[in-house]
Image (cartoon, rainbow over all chains, first blue to last red; front, side, top):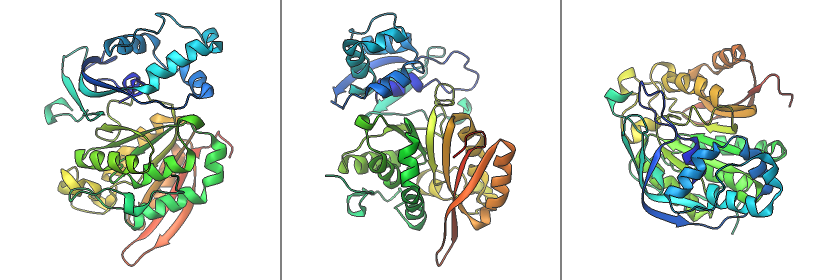
Length: 122
Length: 218
C-alpha cells in the first residue's frame, strides 16, 4: 500500500465523524522504484492532505518532507523527488491502520489493507 | 515485456475467485474499442470495483501505462482471495494497482470523491434470490438479487460520488438488468450514456455501457 492510498483512506465505521487520517503501525515497509511523472505530482498536489502525508511518511521512517508545502515548491526538482518518493515509492507491506476516533485496527497484509467491516460496524 | 491486454496464461486463479469469462472479455474488448479515446482522455486515477481475477484492471493498466504516463490504479473487492489473485495477475504482467479489501469503495468515498477519471465495473449482475447477495467467496462475483440489480444499484451512487468532472464509467450489464432503465436513472444524475459493446453468448446478452457527465463534451 502506497501512501497515496493511505491519503485516500478514512475509517469507514458507522458513526465515525473524524476517521482521517488513519494512524499507521509499521511491521514492514518496502521501497519500489517507479518513474517520476512531474505532471501527475503537480496535479495530485492539491488533492493530497499534506499534513497527513508528512505524518504517514514519518511513521514509516521517511522524514525528508517539509512540514509545510505550497504549490510554488512544485517547480523544485528536489521537492518533486521527495514528494514522489513518499507518495509512490514507499509501500506499507505489513502493518496496521488505526481509526483515529475508535482505535479500530485495520490490518495490512501483503500490501493490502483490509477495510471490511463486521456487521455491527456498518 | 508488454502485452496489449492481460494474457490468460498469466492470469492467476483460486477456487473461490471468478475466472475471466465472456463478461470480462466483453469489458476489455469495450475498453480496447475505446482505446484511443481513453489515451486522449489522459486519466490520472483509474479504479475497478470488484476486480476478481485482476484480468480487467491489468488490461487497463497495460492499455494506459503506468507511473511514467502519470496514471495510478485502485482496485477493490470484498473477496480477499480475489485480491490475492489480482495481485499475482498484476505482478505477472509487470504492472501495479493499489488493492483494497473493501465493500465497493467503503473507506475511499470521502477522500477519493471527485478524483476518479476512469472507473470500470463488472458487477455481480445475475438475477438471484435476494438472500444470495453479499455471501462470501465466489458467489459474491455473480449473485445480483432481484433483476440482478441489488449490487449495481448500490454501486451507481458511489460511482457518481467518486467520478471526476471528466470521469467515465464502464459498466457491464445483462439484458435482464434492464440497462435502459439504468441509463435513464443515470440521466437523472446528469450522465449521458452509450452502449460501447453488445454481445450475445449462448447464455446471456451483455451490454457494456459507458457513462459520462453531460456537462463534459466528448
